[in-house]
Image (cartoon, rainbow, N blue to C red; front, side, top):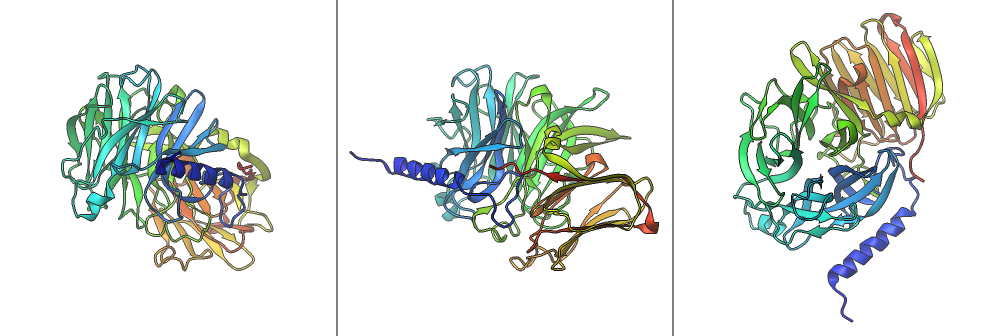
Length: 495
């Protein structure tokens, strides 16, 4: 009997997947309550979608190495966005190319003819042979569908559904049903702009407009992984949010994510204000939101790394993690709109109180505490400078400083850093436009997510201490006390 090469490759990957499931999650720097692949390379979250009580996370995956290679779509599902079940690879490269980033939708009305409630993935084909020949038209858009909730997939036989018109960096489709025009919309990153398309059936696409704001920031690298969605503020007013990810020139170097707030009529997006960086740390990228979530909630996930050093970080079995899922809210301050980010409500089910005190004098020190899986919360009743230090017995320290309308993180002496010339050469700085009244700091082995003023400001960083941090020091200017200080341990989610 003749067995096809594709069958053997699929079988081998599934066997490898089964073996990897049995590995423990105790490798150095392995995050314990963030999503990571069992093994090998991962980057952008893809195809984030909810169906029948389960959240589906697809992601850029290379099953043969811990550095970036020919891209696949990995797959995991969760009932609560915290505990994930790893599933076999969903989409493999084929003769049209590698499977780059994209999105997934639930076709409730069977507009595509694939079947009612079919899960449809929309992704970028990257043809590396065309790229190697020096041609620009290396990328096109394809679709695939699943009738069994993402377990098995069929690629559309007429792929690609959107061919490249000789434009470089033509990728990362985010598709959504627009009820106001009774059509699907697609936002696609093309060079340094976003192209907007529409379709009645997910197969045939009509170009509508370009979005490239006037008087925009200087060159920020390739535009990637866009998203577009409506949100209501408390008054009931609806605005549209356009997320754009950039491969370079983020505020603290390398890749990063920003967003625009404006209006969208199904054809044209117009921004009403300047863009805002969603997170000012160096380790927050390719941020996109889940589709089809109940109650119109908008849940965001990002890749927690940076292209400046992602392939070099000191992990040997696996590479990269996702941020904690964050729920977005649109707020208005005077005439400006902004996104507020908060940990999803179910995050609290992982926490257990270690220390709690209503009023705490400073300097404050908590010694001999395992900070590797910890949440620290406190409030400030007065405007003051603050220095927060995480230390271990080897003298390694990661500092978080609030001073003169800036938040500054410093990982120059945080642990291993010699894998990269840029990882820890300078502090990371975020400009603040408000008096800071609250801190939330979430630590997981080799990562920290900092949310200020209940999520108005966000900063996400990696670090690699050679020993877990075990001392927490907090100093304030003029010894201003902390209020409502809470230190929680956070449970591991992996079995």
